[in-house]
Length: 376
Ligand SMILES: Cc1cc2nc3c(=O)[nH]c(=O)nc-3n(C[C@H](O)[C@H](O)[C@H](O)COP(=O)(O)OP(=O)(O)OC[C@H]3O[C@@H](n4cnc5c(N)ncnc54)[C@H](O)[C@@H]3O)c2cc1C
Image (tube, rainbow, N blue to C red; front, side):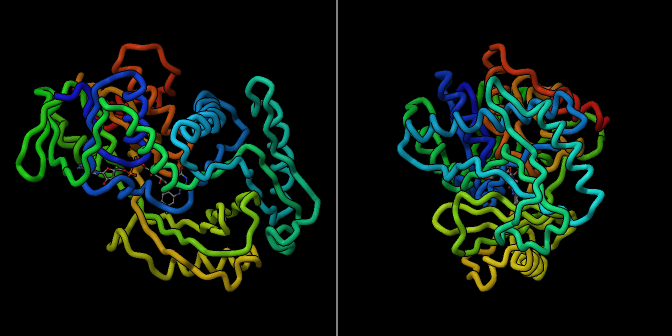
């Protein structure tokens, strides 16, 4: 019997396995298909901060996570010799209307006040300087914002790096092709689709959007569903773009330059869908918008089209920590659009809580107990 059994081999599950591995905990990770088969195996990897205004504990938590991820990834890369394709390349947001410029000026001040860690400072510059074609000048008639905190990572490379780091721990096992059909945390057992049963000391449920039905089945009384899947589509283009160029972001459109001339474009956000993993005309429209915004992408070949399901908790925030009704179950899901920037810290909280160690303070709205209480 493993001390900690993790369900799900996405970004959340892998960080949890790493944190458990580092703590010397006997760990087994079960993944129903293959590592990265879920939302984490996508293309974008944008690591975007919240707006710097109306600062609160939740924004501070995410800020600290975005700052600390850089060191975490550097450590992993040094340990494994792999590259996770991380770069703090910043983000550009074109200002299309005059009043947005005034708002952005306010945010510039807010960032000065809140975006620092020790002697490191990050900025939200409002700029009138030319755009140099990234984006097209006519997309930014009132200048642009350049935020120096945003970063990007190559999702699949990060998963491969985490996996390589995990291979150094003889007490951590990863099993792919193992589909969990139900969890009985009171008895410390779960059932697999193939009929087998597996026992555990403690279970960490990190099955992405598939976590919610498993959580709902634990309810003793009828209650609202704990979360849902939101489909997203994205594409990867091959273009002659400097890998150090900042992310362009406007009205839900992300253009993310990666290494080796790859540029990711995304993402749709679909609450209703019939085909979860196929792409369609909505993605074509995004690619067209991207090419209009960034002329360097015109005629760039599309080398991959991809769709996945984001885990969105009913409470909209990440859903993390001990399940209130089940001492032996922790939940680690609901990262929705921001999992990559926070998964390392959230996973650390879950493993620290299991190990009875002091940890960083989770925002109350992230706690599993807060989510479950709101459903009743
Ligand atoms: C188009 C798109 C663009 C995105 N862009 C960004 C971005 O730029 N930045 C960002 O931070 N986030 C982004 N996201 C969101 C991000 O991808 C997700 O929030 C994140 O991947 C969720 O990670 P996870 O580990 O919780 O879930 P997943 O990656 O879905 O992992 C869950 C794993 O559990 C496995 N599993 C499920 N059920 C079972 C079971 N019963 N038994 C065993 N295993 C099971 C699945 O196969 C899967 O591998 C994007 C998402 C999409 C779709």
